[in-house]
Image 1 (cartoon, rainbow, N blue to C red):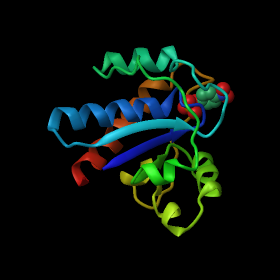
Image 2: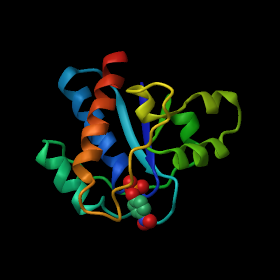
Image 3: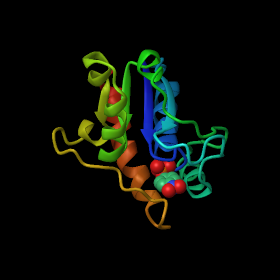
Image 4: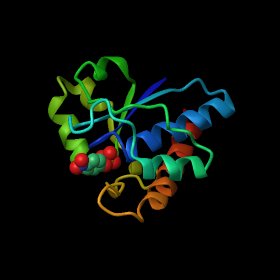
Length: 149
Ligand code: 4NP
């Protein structure tokens, strides 16, 4: 099973989702392969956001080695599931889908916890206090994903 986590910049939210799911998979030997990407080109090659890294490591999740990359159409071929962090990311990924098979791989991550509610993980980039909330939401969603794989 290969899972791709996607947000806008690939520096705040999707790297945390990647780190959490990988850490759960490693601990439980689930064999899930996880990566992350951004819909934008804003931060290609950059380290993840310092505030996101600091919050994640405070929960034992190390995302210090990752670098931002942009989502590309070939990701539809390389991944079984593509989780968007918010509804804008979801729409942007769906725009790039080539067929219904591509479309069927794309899901809003918080629908794992509250199916059909179409909730978004709030973007913490412009504030300083959203990172703990992001971690809590993504931890719950990743636990659900891991329990169903
Ligand atoms: P992310 O957060 O999508 O969770 O990585 C953002 C990162 C950068 C920007 C916006 C959101 N930006 O505008 O540069």
